[in-house]
Image 1: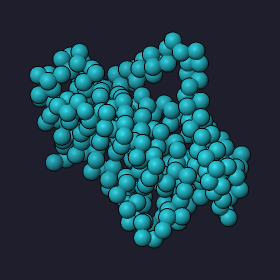
Image 2 (image 1 turned 90 degrees about the vertical axis):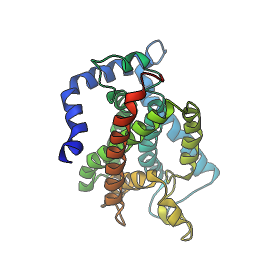
Image 3 (image 1 turned 180 degrees about the vertical axis):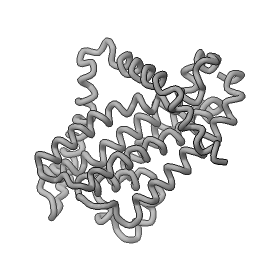
Image 4 (image 1 turned 30 degrees about the vertical axis):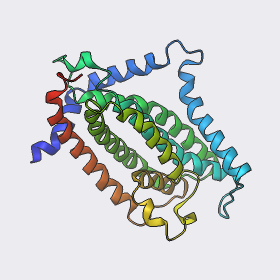
Length: 266
């Protein structure tokens, strides 16, 4: 049993240089040929943030008693960054197995690392966005000691995403429509996730439904420890750790069994 729980981490450590190199190459090739190149890593989250700020500040005219306009924009950014990281990872990861048929038959490249590489590539946007966010928080004087909890929350997000992508990329080998359905799912999650609002703004009768959205725990944890300077409320942190662990090890178990039939179906 212990071997099962440590197996994925042993795999990551044994092939850490391979993961690093392939991730770096994928990021470079992803922006190769574009006019702005790697500048898109900065522009992408900022463009999304601008749209959100425009809609909620000037169209919906949302106001918080505790925040001025600048602080509210930063609160949005706290929720937007993990959402973009998750959404990109899911979008690229679901089709990662079917789009890498040559690697499936390459015995030198562990198949389990194909979805992992996809998730890690998309974290580049989150790395840049997080750097911008932390600098902004420091300038606003909003950073606190609870920000030290952020790496743990980020790791939980990555493990949750990898586990989910392991499952969905396996299913996509047999259900190719799944990668199209994911685009719709991401759009729905963007609408119902607390990116531009807090749980306190949701009517009491609807709050239990928030618990069905795993992004709720990730986003609220980010907002609490970074912007609000406190330990994530109402057990959110521990629920996030639980669902991340369940997703990660369930995904690894599922992928390990499904990979045996990939070569015949990709």
